[in-house]
Structures are given as structure tokens and as C-alpha cells.
Picture 1 (cartoon, rainbow, N blue to C red):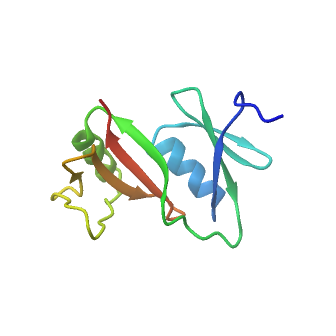
Picture 2: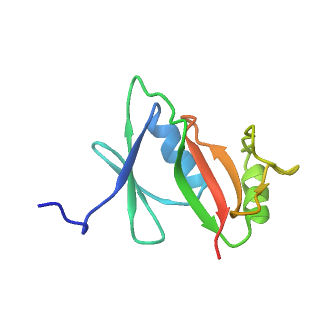
Length: 124
């Protein structure tokens, strides 16, 4: 029977070493290497599995969302580490790349080394 006691998400990357460096050193996540890939340990107690795939195609959607108290500070920190915010048509993004929609949280998007989309968004 399916249980909710051990549910996790996963996504692929084309370079496991680059992903490990990025998620551990740039984003500061706890990362465990396993024989099959990487386990990203999240502050909530959950985890995400990242696996290598030779014919990897980057996700065109957000694979991880990072809720933060201060989106501007988080964007500044990531830019200082060499990342650049993604810009998308249809979103009113400020000079820092942060979208401030009337019905949603402040949000900015970045990509990991495998070009998967990550979001930084304000949480209440």
C-alpha cells in the first residue's frame, strides 16, 4: 500500500559533481552522495533525490522552491556567488530580477549547473 511516510521528489542532472558542489557550496544544503546520486536534505526534514542522466534535458519548470524571509537579500547573496536571475516574458521583474505580482509572493528564478529552474520566494 502507498504511504506518505517516505515521500520525496527527484530530478536529473548531467554532472553529479557539479550538482553536488552547487547544492552544497552555493546553496548551503546538506548533501549526501549515494551510489545512485545525491540526497539533498532540506531544513523541513524532507529530502530530494538528484540522479545523473546522460541524456539529461533540463526541466522547463521549477524543480525546487526556496521560501525565504527576504527575497532581495537572498537574490543579492546568490548574485554575489555568481548566479544570475532568470527573466521570463509575462512577469514584471525589477532590476534585480524579482517579480512582485499583486496576487503572489515576491519571486526570483535561477538555474542550477544542469539548467534546472529553482525559485527563491517570500514566505509569510
